[in-house]
Image 1: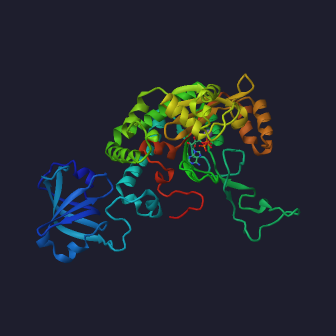
Image 2: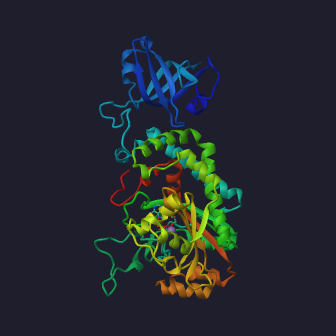
Length: 479
Ligand code: ATP
Ligand code: MN
């Protein structure tokens, strides 16, 4: 008999029919006559109750049904009399597919700390929390493609190994096949990378944007969605060394349209989760409330998770310039009382504490900050007439800070070349990028959305290590 997924079975009303289900034991309760097993197969957060007649199953078999053992159960679908479930399966035949020694199994049917679960990342997906997180992660990835596909964007695969060190977004990981003990040397004693695999220095990409721009100059509207690597030694709850980034790039868009696209995109994704992941979100909403209760009153979110998601879908994002933001911060209570750790001044990059003040305390909704000083932004951003700012935009989210960074791109060849030189980028390293400005250049714009930052928001999890299956962070590449 072919296997039915628990997700489908829980909706079934074919009472009396014979079914086969397979999954992992979450809990087992028993008395002298019957045993109840909660079985989960990962297709849905809910478990299926299996009812076992203790007399007929035999003592040995019953004993080996332990938490997290894997079972194949054949039985009759019956309407459940128990609370909180509509169907259950009266077992006729049970086969143990995989034993789980209860003495050695690290996951117990109790709440474990997220820190502990990170140490057993190979098993943590079997918990309700991580099952919910990774089903939502899948749904969000699917929704990203659906959003762009509906709008006629082309999914462009940009390289993971890059020969350009002009991406400029962060510290890079070197890719090399040279022998670290005995590399070929130049006469001056430096390593001769001409003998390396690619005949030059190569690294893992920090952004697909520059290649994305090349695509946009031909295909009009493109996006990338791929792994991104940054070797920053920042051990925060919002940074990974390996993360996934979505980068749309659109010919003919200027800053305004870029902002509209970013806002539509984020709302679409959140709405998709609300429509398609409600079971998992309800579980995470509960979890979120319990976590918030542990926090100090003033740090608590005044909305539940689902409430927060609905709020973001419904409210227009606040759009203000960096200059306005600095004025607000200079007038703010925490600034005047010296409560910010980092200084605020025009020309200095905003820190996460400033961003979060604007979003969580001042506007109480997502904020798009635009027109940053050109010195604190990348060389490729479009320079404004004022000579001081660039057409940059950062989208800031409650509880997260920056979730999107983007800009209109500089399409003026001279300005771009001068700015690249000013920040120390050699023209010969970037000739292919500059070429697009020589041959049919046009205004264009794009942005990068950190996929895991989005997931932090949608799942209400507090640490970015808990929204990617196998996190890579400084000193950690296990699993
Ligand atoms: P931050 O200031 O938060 O370090 P950034 O300004 O360096 O981010 P960008 O280069 O603008 O980041 O990258 C675009 C987006 O990619 C960010 O808005 C963020 O959502 C995400 N992102 C950047 N760095 C990381 C990282 N180390 N881990 C996870 N996501 C990241
Ligand atoms: Mn940024």
